[in-house]
Image (cartoon, rainbow over all chains, first blue to last red; front, side, top):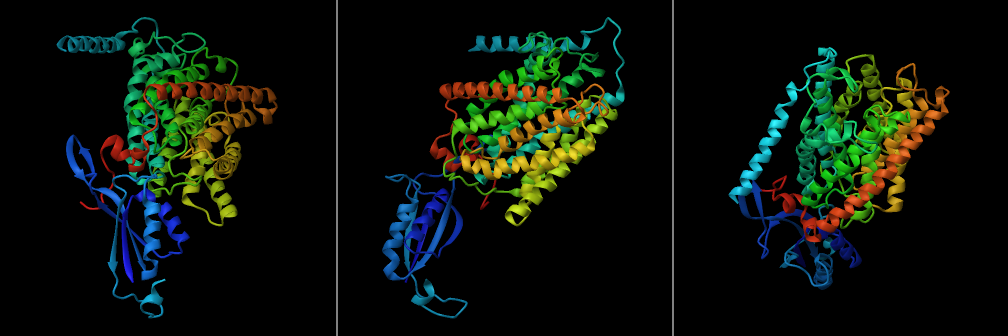
Length: 116
Length: 441
């Protein structure tokens, strides 16, 4: 089992969800985060005082999948979250982590059967 | 550089001098007596109408996505700054001085001759400047209404230019036709108590035009984007309802029975329309919503605006109940079918509500309410309905054509729409370099 964490542009969520549903991945958790990568955020000005390097809004999407689902999930995320054909700086990153255990609270099931 | 500054200073001085002359301008000739009650009432009303613009800012601001809330508040607020100046410099003169059939002249430029004595042609018992500043608030909120149509995607610089041009070439002439001494729509007998045509149809049609030419918001797949803060919208609607008493009752320009009639009809129509929208939703969607109810109340306020001083409370109930039906159909059924992105329904509420209100005035107006008004169709005078119909058609036609031309002009010179990237990041950060809400300190 793997835990996939994707940091994406907020406005890309709808497309991402669509792509995931098409690959039969229906379970995801979304939270709002702040961050920046190479585009170095934005400059904000408050009453004339400049603040540089402010963080940009991003979404953090977490998806737990069985190993045989990893590749297609990654493909779906890339397809949904990439801007245009070539992509743009700021489109985000995907991290794939090993996942030790998964328990469905309702039934107590564990492992691969509990994940989907 | 220094010379340029000196020249600017000189011009500024000239302005200031032209203002200081106003107070002493009219000294001869017997002047009508100023009534302190009327003056106090009109000044308070003016303040209430001003408050409607921040009210509108929150009404609209709650509906946009949170990356655009400051952009919305800023557009409304800067209108208070820019058009207040436009009005005292030349807007009032263009709208209300005699001039020609199209608009006024510049004889009242920088309030020259607009003093503290009454100007009986418009209001005999209050200082001329009280009338002027009361009217200023209408000139401010009208262009602000249009913002709802192009919300979340207009460049701030282009917005400023567009709004100044629109106030000058659309609002000022139409106000002149309807309200100035000798205005031809007024002469024709068209009734518009507080601005159904001049304010709401005018702005509503401009909203439809701008929504169509600027195009849909990115990612708008024919469904509303979720409002980011509906409590703001409710707060804004509350401020609008309150301010509207100044708008309509204040338009009597005196603290008298007519003002009371306008106050009562205004409240009644808003109440009927808010309830009516809630019931429609209940029947149509299974649940009444606060968003729908406040939208209905605002539609009711719009519809009663031209009629407030010409109809009785019974008619106000009918006007209010029906306006929600028309606006609900437009906003909930027709707009999604047509697929244009009048983002916050400036046309659906103000345009449609304004048209219904202006026509309803031709149906329900009664000389028993206002002897200076006219009887409508239901009081045996079908002619009045025809006159209202013509006034509505002319306002729609004029606003449609000139708003389109002005938009295209500004678009050609400055480019109206923000870049796709800026639209994605939001107007707050890209147009103003500030954010409304923090996630971490």
